[in-house]
Image (cartoon, rainbow, N blue to C red):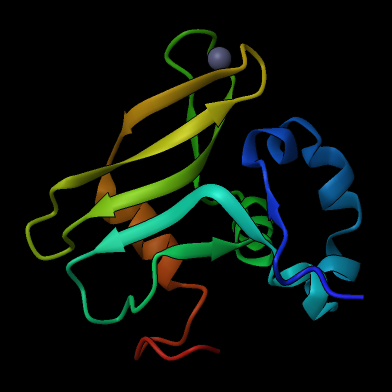
Length: 131
Ligand SMILES: [Zn+2]
């Protein structure tokens, strides 16, 4: 059984986030699930510490479970879960895109870039290596 080629819709995961977080321990300890790739889930940066663009299910769930990569919806005040982030940590210019599961809208232009980039880098060691 392999799920490494699965590409799940991230909006669907955010809609069912309670289910995924309930099974968080199982997912992060099961490589076939941890490494599931998600549509639209990516990070792009001019920083050498980020050497790939697509994000894994396990990474996003780790961020969400720590209240990271979450913003506030400008339409309904609900929680927006970031699914992509792009920019330069050197200039600080950049923004993220997320999805509000309350009003089911995609939200773009989410800032500040540095905060969300720092939260992502926190998944790794301080030197940028994978923990
Ligand atoms: Zn909303």
